[in-house]
Length: 342
Image (cartoon, rainbow, N blue to C red; front, side):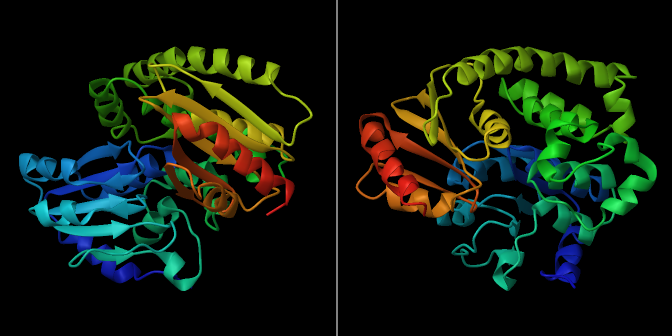
């Protein structure tokens, strides 16, 4: 049973001659783009904000000469973007159902009560690039129903024994690809664009994992630069772990944001803790929240009351940004809600 209008979405892409893809700058957003780009070649642009598609991005549409815009795994679109956009807009997402601007064609399985990651939706519409679909789904801690097809050809990329998506993410080659995808989206915008261009030309996960071509080597070279920063931060976080229910780690760096990557890793390592990774930048803490024992989205909503900031996401994983001067009060609110086991 499908939980979104597959035929209508398929028709939208097939009728496009020059698509432009805006996708969330995380592994599942990237995987969604790679799947659809296999069907219709087009420019892919990662969206690094809340994620919200604002009018700032509209000029890209006319610059590129796109006839249709596909918005992938992005939670919100501003009316100003729609008004300024010179092409029709197709929006495929799996966050909470949004207010949809007039004229936008919207596809979201959550309307029918089912949360299915965007790469799985893309693969349902176009069963190509199976390995990217699997990488993207596991990046969202989601085990897809088409996994047996992947196992036939690439079973060795999964652990011999595993019980959860987290086991795959942190103990397998599929997990290595997830981390690679995440790190390829970090750094200078020009380099990120080149990473995406190179990755879009790779047809096989083995080529990537074995680094058997100059293209794959180039991607792993970028990965190792980011990985060094990640390892330094992870070491600092682990030294700060205490018996407190809340694992809070604040850091400040102008290089790369590691909040999502670290928060995911820590939630796997410490499933009984409420994780807050907070990066200070431009007067606000940009945060990732995790907690398998809580409804993280509800904790966040209640803790934002009376605080300058915003946030949202899913039940066990959220992001947000809090004004620096309000952060202490915000953490006090989190403590209250976590202690009440929301």
